[in-house]
Amino acid sequence: MSSGLLALLDDVALIAKTAAASVDDVAGMTAKAGSKAAGVVIDDAAVTPRYVLGFSPAREIPIVWKIAKGSIFNKLVILLPGALILSQFAPWAITPILMAGGLFLCFEGAEKVIELFRPHEEDGGEVPEPGTDLEKTRVNSAIKTDLILSAEIMAISLSSLPESPLWEQAVVLAAVGVAITAGVYGAVALIVKADDIGLHLAENSGSGAVKVFGRGLVRSMPWVLFALAKIGMVAMLWVGGGILLHGSEELGLHAPAELVHHLSEAAGHAVPFVGWLATAVGSAVLGLAVGFCLVPLGHLVSRLRGSH
Image (cartoon, rainbow, N blue to C red; front, side, top):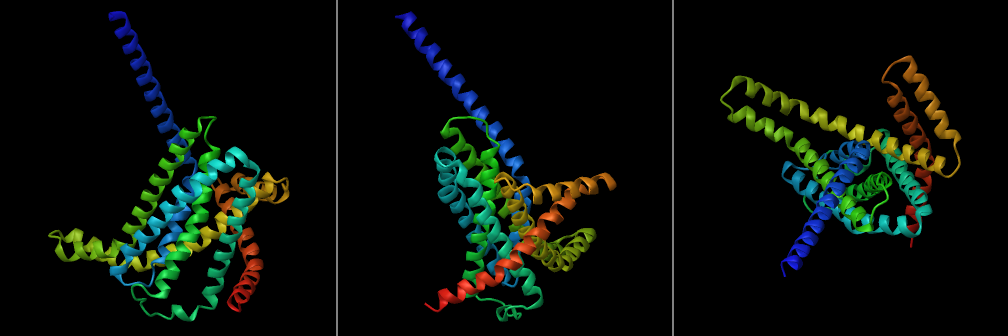
């Protein structure tokens, strides 16, 4: 009887150790996968604030929340199952799908560059009202862009995982998706509400230095948001061009990626720490060139759809 109980306890202990090891493995893989996707996370955080510009302060957090919910849906409901299915049954399809997303980012970025010189009539300075078509359009556009960036995040995360059971991959991808979404949209919420925080400090703080800091925050935030909007535009081109470079190399077309790589190496040798910047600029230039080619085609498709 006692020997049976001891055997049972040994089995329970073994199961517990195995479960603990699995938890450690998942935590380690999650940290590694998240760090690999850090570059795209930065782009995501830079892209999103531009969708909130022009709205009343009362709408900023609700809009960020709507986009965050759309981002979670993108990652957990659309991309996670899709990534696992493709990795198991059609790994060859992942690169072309990512490149299609890269083309979309190039198109969006190029459109924003064109808008700098030919603003849309809807951007004439009026504050959009809650629930208006412009708000819905902005939110939907942000969620579409997030889908592409999230696909890149999930693909990078998946590619960094070692051979492991399917359930572990699913848990890691879900953990990375939730953590990145919380981090990105938490940061975006802080950015867009920083002026309100500064106003509160300026009006309610008992410290003169804190009041000065608050007033400086209020004065600087419009410029910060303006700069972030432009950074987001460049980030779209940078990420889109980078996806196309990497994808073309995966498909056997090495010349474009090798050219950018050689330019990056030359810049890095000439001036330390500039190699990364050269790669980013090369990717953005490619993204802009491709985007300019796609904009007329996109507008033609839009007109054809509108005529039906």
